[in-house]
Image (cartoon, rainbow, N blue to C red):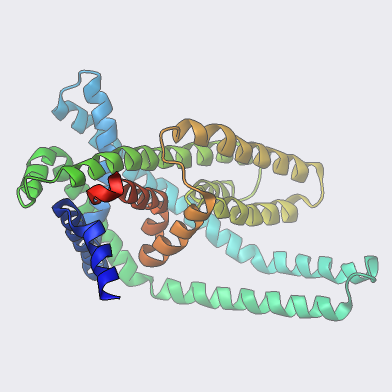
Length: 353
C-alpha cells in the first residue's frame, strides 16, 4: 500500500512545477475560505477591475493612451454604478413591494381556480387533494413572508456593509487598474523564477475566464434589456423586476431559465388570464430564450472551453455552495480551471511516453 502511494506521489508530484502549482492553489483556496468575508471588498474590486480591464485593453488596441482608456472606462463604470443605485434599485424595490402586496389577491384567485378543478376533472383530482395543496401553499407563503420580514429587520448590517462597498470598491478598482503593472510585478516577485507551468495555466485561464465573465456580463445586459422592452411594450406588470430576474437567471445554466419562467407565467396569468396577451407573452418569452441559447451564447462564448452539462451542474452546486453568488457566477470558469489544470499537470517521463 505504501509503495502504491509512493508511486502515485512520484508520478504526479516529482516535478517542482507541480509542487508550485499545489502551493499556489492551496494558498488561494485557504485565503478565500478563511478570510473571504474580510477581504470581500478587495475580491469584488479585483473582479470588477478584471472586467473593466478588457474594455480598457480594447481601447488601447484602438491606439488610446492607457491613462485615457482607464479614465473613459472608469467614468463609464461610475456612471453605471450611479444609475444602478439611484434609479434601478429603487425601481426594483418599489415593484417588489407592490408584488408582495398583491400576493394575497393572487393567492385568493389561485385558490378559487384550484377549487374548481375537482368539478371539471373529478376522475383526476379530489377535493381533499386540493385542500391539502392549498394548505401547503398557504403555509409556504406564510413562511416566505416571515422570512422576508426577518430579512428586512436584519438588513441594517447589510446596509452598512453596502455603504462600505460603495466607498471602498470604486476606490480599489481605480488603483487596481491604474497600478496594474506595479501590483503584478510586486506579486510576481514572491514567486520562483521557474514557473512556466503556472504561467501557462494563468494564460489559459486568463483567456477562458476573460471570455466567459465578460461574455456573461454582456449576456445579462442584452437579455435583460430585450426582455424589459418586450414586457414593457406588452404592458406586463412588474416588467422591470421580471426582466431583471430573467437577466440574472442566465448566470445559472439550464436551471435559471426554468426557474425564472415560473414568476413570469404567474404574473402574466393573473394579469390577463388565458387571453391572447398571455399566449403572446409566452411566445415572445420563448423566442427570447431560444435567441439566448442558440444565437447569443454561441456568439459570446465561441472561444470558451466546452464542458459537459453534468460538469457544469456539478460546478454550480459545488462552487455555489462554497461561495454563494460569486461561486455560481464563476462556476464555469472555475470548472475550466480544473480541466486546464488536469491537462497541463506535470507528469513523469513514463506517463508522457
